Length: 254
Ligand code: PEP
Image (spheres, rainbow, N blue to C red):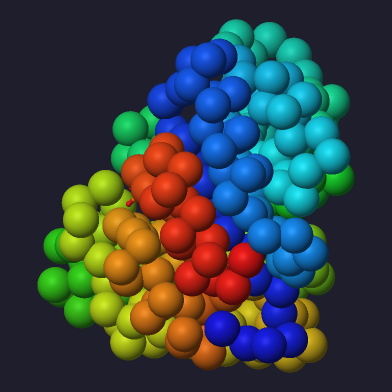
């Protein structure tokens, strides 16, 4: 973790939660956080709970995020949620291109890039998720895949767009599997991504937070976060238990 970049850790609750469960979880996390932290802790709740979690986070050092956003601003798009709506409910961040959206909802690089742009236009900070599948890694295509996913956004919006964004490297084979990338494997991809942004703008690349996601747990977090280009984590399963999420936040120096 670089000392110049503020740490960033987010919980992705995926399709989990209930009114009572969310209240208990947020309360337990708040109670376990030390005062005066720098950096950011973000909770990405499902759409129906954004209002509830926004209220629960009022006055807290944590901020609110959503898990997806429409690429369109308004109109006949039944079931979709616009970036302006997320902003209305106090969201600061939104995930775009999570592998579950790419895989289960057919989201292409181009669509993910449009979502990234829609988030920025509404004043939200997009968290661009990217990563290779196991087959792609085995075929030696990791670099090609993550660069292609990054370039889809870089070409449309330029490096300046990353001033207000976060990159999340999430190897698909590590998400929810218990099989975490080694710190060296993750660091190699993070370095590559930073170098690619630096080819367009070195100062934006130096400030860009690039976080790792994929089976981060209390016992592996500190090794991952010790890498110079890993600025925090995107946490799925372990964000649903206050004790586990707090241990990861503490590993990130919160
Ligand atoms: C995720 O959902 O983005 C994720 C990284 O999940 P997990 O931590 O459970 O692997």
